[in-house]
Length: 250
Ligand code: BV8
Image 1 (cartoon, rainbow, N blue to C red):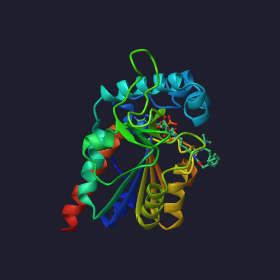
Image 2: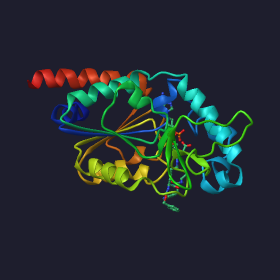
Image 3: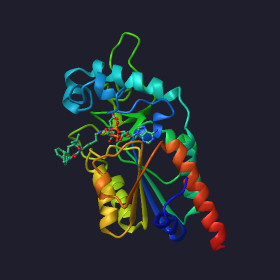
Image 4: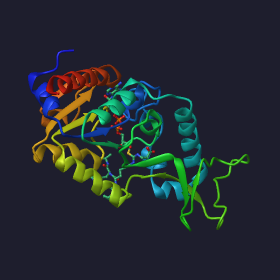
C-alpha cells in the first residue's frame, strides 16, 4: 500500500503516538461490532442493556447479555491489527493505546500501555461494597451473581451509557492525545463521547490525525487523512513503513 507522503513524514518524525480503537479492531477476530449490519445494536437495545437502571430493573437479562459476549470474547484470538499495535508500541518512544473495547484482546495480544476507557468485561465488582471479582457468571439457577463479601449485586466492570468514565484513565487519555504528534483512530464510528472527542483534541494540539476504517465516519471530515480498508490489513503495513523509516533514520 502506498501511504501518502504526509503520513510517511509523520511516521518518520513520530516521537509520541496515541491510538484510539473501537469494535472494528476486533471485528476480524469475530467479535461483533455495535453498529454494523450484524452489529449488536441490531439485535439488542443499548437502553435495555447498557445502562444502570436497566441493570437494577432486570439484572438477569443484563447478565445474560454480558455472559453471551464474554463467551464470544473468550473463544476468539487477537488478530493482525492487535498484533501490529504491539509492534508499533515497541518502535516509538511514547505510545498510548486508548480503547473503547471491553474485550481484553489488546492485553491478550501483548500491548502494554493500554487505557480501557469503557472498562473490561473480564472484571466485575459489587455495587454495594465495590469488592472486585474476576470471572463471575449467571448462576446455574439463572440468578445474577452476588458478592461473596456482602451479598450485594455484582455488575460487569464496564462503563454504561450515562455513567462517568474512570476519571484517572480518561485524564491520562486526554493528556496522551494532547502531547502526541501522530494520532491513529482505528475501527470506531466515533459517535460515543467523550471518547470521540480525543482525536479532535489531538488535531487541535497539532498532531497529524489519521483514521483507519473500512468506511467513512462522522470523523472523516475532520482528519488529515482517512485510509479506507480493514485494520488487520492496513496496520501491519504501517508497522513495515515505521520499521523502514526508523532504519533509514538510524
Ligand atoms: C458520559 C461499554 C457523563 C459497555 C460503552 C455528547 C454528545 C452526545 C451524547 C453524549 C455526549 N456526552 C455524553 C453523551 C451520552 C453518551 C453518548 O456518547 N451517546 C452517543 C450514543 C450519542 N455518552 C455516555 O453516556 C458516556 N458517559 O458521558 O457520562 C454524562 C452522564 C450523563 C449525561 C451526560 C454525560 C459513556 C459512554 C460509554 C458507554 N459504554 N461500552 C459495553 O461495551 O457493553 S460504548 C460502546 O459503544 C463501545 O465501548 C464504543 O464506545 C461504542 C461503539 O462504538 P465503536 O466501538 O466505534 O463500534 P461501532 O460498531 O459503532 O463502529 C465500528 C466501526 O468499525 C465502524 O465505523 C465500522 O465501519 C468499523 N469497522 C468494522 N470492521 C472493521 C472496521 N474498521 C476497520 N477494520 C475492520 N475490519
